[in-house]
Image (cartoon, rainbow, N blue to C red; front, side, top):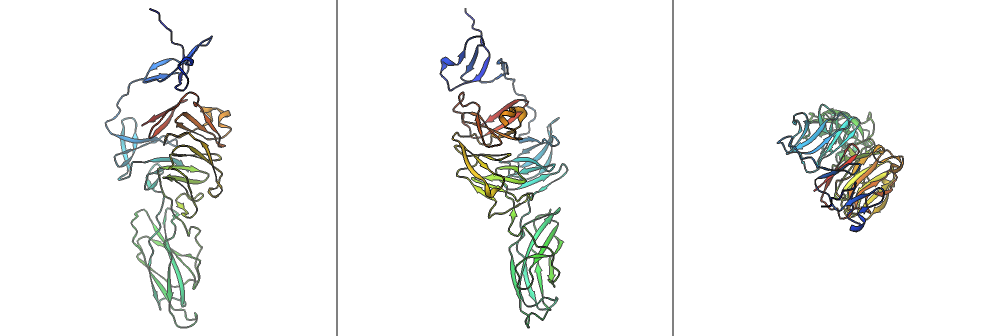
Length: 406
């Protein structure tokens, strides 16, 4: 019986005709139509894929290792946990989270963790919310005694503070002091009934007030969060104004990334930006971009942001949200959640074009690179087609990239 020697395997090619899959000559090689349960090394040799081994009975999901201190995080049911990979035990960090979509990133030597409803920050010792919800509006009572306020209109608003970070403002409340005279009688005051704060991590409430018949809010004072009421008795020594007057808490989403001094989150077809260097605040009027389709991944690079859509990929070019240019780059459908950042030591300086970061995702025609300057490189377009999946997760193992699809 004739035995055919199998030449080195170059990989999968399900695009070309069968008669061109085998390459002859001095360097024979072979492409496969498909390969199941085998690994191919760099020389083209085939190895049976090693069988799996169960490490634990616990059903961990969303496993991620921080590049900062190599801590490993995961979700277990509705808990966020920190894993000990020696025995696969865990330390519970958060209870009662929504584990459906979890994102991790490193910022300022801390780990950011985003769920569908909240964003948290972990400093290696404790975890707390990143954002601060704006306070509920206070209740005001004008008084004709107890202070040195003249008759007229006054505007009051509150903000909360935690560890030096301040929230946006509550709704502005206007009150009128009815005091006889033309403003020369100074005897009024304003009693503020503080709203109840449900967030146990908040430490202070800040009170802002305008001058008589003014509109600019300036700081009157800061008080412990347990304070139930205060009295504004004078406005001649108000402090600084607040630049976050129209801000709200930065919303979370299915995706979260850091880019150009801002935090990015995305859900449905909306990409949102935090304020520059103020990651917990967001301007709902301006800090967003609406895409034509549902977002399937976001991955920032040096000169813009790669964004996956349902049936194509776009590149947002620019460094400021208000100045970004929308460029459609490919008509092939990306696999949702499959994007990963790769560096130049894996793909080479020529492909990375000198950029620090290059985006890579799995598409219906194989892996695709998105360079730091917005160029597309389809690595397998002439070899692969028809890849479909509802979701994928990519991981780098040495110089090899693996994407699990489902």
